[in-house]
Length: 248
Image 1: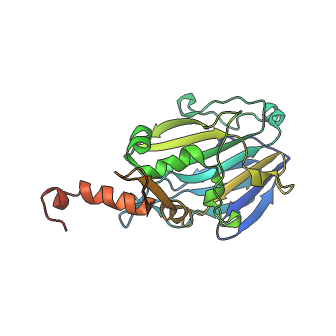
Image 2 (image 1 turned 90 degrees about the horizontal axis):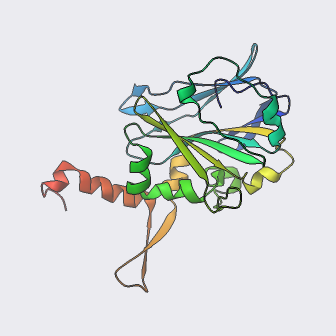
Image 3 (image 1 turned 45 degrees about the horizontal axis):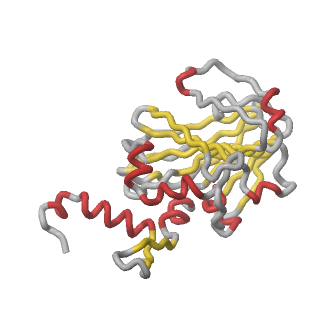
């Protein structure tokens, strides 16, 4: 989807930061750089390069994927309104087939690529981290300030949940989510193929600081909190100091 995405003469390319902006049209290749680099006890996040010959635009995701902020970080989204365009897209270079996530579709589709902090596989993420629920139930609209971080239930071919696949690359879990395109992509600014890259400095807060509610021992009482607070409690309980009784 990135390094060997073929030429498309109908594509538009966008960057979602504090504002949503179009960064160009008709690029012929996308590549993903600076992955898995440690710096200041953090993980360097992807830089996405949009390329067409000598014309190149680098989108720096800014910030870091923190192990202390465990969410699925969105790297890039591909929205395909006209699946027939896939017939005209071929590999740009030879690739290791084991690193390819295949899919087929006859309907409009959105493909999102996420990364999870290193050392956490998809099963652990889905079963041990509350924030993973957003991966399964909400479109990428929640990551985007331009939509007001609006929550929109995700769907895929009439089903309630998206299709989720993952691959492991040197301890990193890359998650591909396949779903129907979000409502905001119905706007005419989005052509047959649209590519969105994300500023990761905005996405952790959009998930972790959302208000959530969960049941208590009293079935009539719900407790309000945030994913960040829930994550903090999990990390506190996993701390050696906490387990040795050295906690409040």
